[in-house]
Image 1 (cartoon, rainbow, N blue to C red):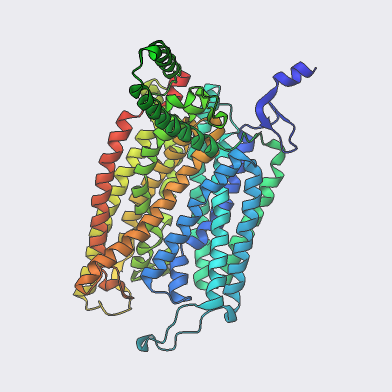
Image 2 (cartoon, helix red, strand yellow; image 1 turned 90 degrees about the vertical axis):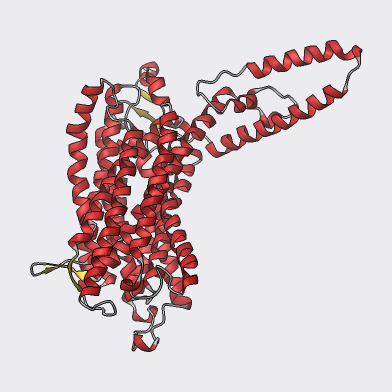
Length: 576
């Protein structure tokens, strides 16, 4: 009986009661579907505020447009960067399900603080009596502390969720079968689809509430959403299979790198001593020592090509037990190092995506946002790429991908790197379109003498939708491809940490956006008129900034092509 139970148990996995997870009872499509529903509610709670936050900061907290944009990009960047903490803790000490529950509680607390501040006028800055006389002051002191405490508690919670929920869902499938691997690929596609479902509700229903009823109701809706998602996650606990943490993957990485550095320097020291020793009586000893050393250096034989220097970390050195590394550990570190150039190549793409929630929203706010008799809030502009993603994701998964599998006669059909590359191309086109649209917008303002006016320009905001469509397509191809790439290529004990790199790339993209804005203003400020300075967007040189982003994205794509051409898939090698 015990043998039968052992055969039907998932090796390395437990259920929510820390007992062995059983095949047929834990994991599978049902468990992953519950996780996808939770992601809809989680992303609704996060994106409802992130998409409209730049207007909240400028109109109600009285920050300038450029400062508001930097606050938003820093907030979103921090949220995504903290995903790596959630991924690390999931792999090393706690489980993915525990990290989700802790992070959801933290995000709930942050949203509650923001709701209270938006509801109580005493926690808000004074009203602007006369902006023309510069008597409009942004939020300061304890009120600012309350704002940023709420924001960064939300960021901490979102980071933990993003670092734990995707790998938790992907772990529900059996990777040892072709059907399980295909289902896992489908999960990542529909994870992006569910991100878009949450975003659709956020940028329409919740943004409308924020603009027409009040921000306290918008924050309150997000608070209820994350609470509901947490309860659904708990109700699905009996269906999950949960990967057992196997210790810190970062410790392994540092151990291998430290062992290599030490043994490299130790070898040089030993060679210097041997070269000084020319006595014939030591000739035999030296020969034996050199032979022994060459045998040790030739011993490791790892599968991953490249980084052969790390093979020396496997050699035995009894005097330093703490630096002893196995071949498996060296192999895992090699795999991680191979993915870093691909990771770095996606940062510029996410820098372009950062414009969706900053300058693009502010551009739309200066334009005619009416569709017939309906006035569309500027923060609802992401509805265009969201709807496009919701259409394209099922089409890609059920039509394009099966056709590609038949055409290429491979299990993947379209490789992860091909998907990421498509996203990079889309981001280049998006920045070019954004620059041309901004030139048209400013041309209309100049033509009608409205450069110094706050009145809506006689040009429809639908022009901005063009850059949103390209950036939305880039997001679909790059994010799903990047998450699946890291999850499948990473060693099993590092999967949560590796998958979180997808969000870390987003974070670094947002940070890069803030840094570029500051650098551009510093350099162009010497001429007396910085490109992105002041409170009037019509005086910005935003089109030049977009053209610069387009050029940088093009150079980044060439950098990506170089590394993608050299990359060899570990998962393909393993399956073959």
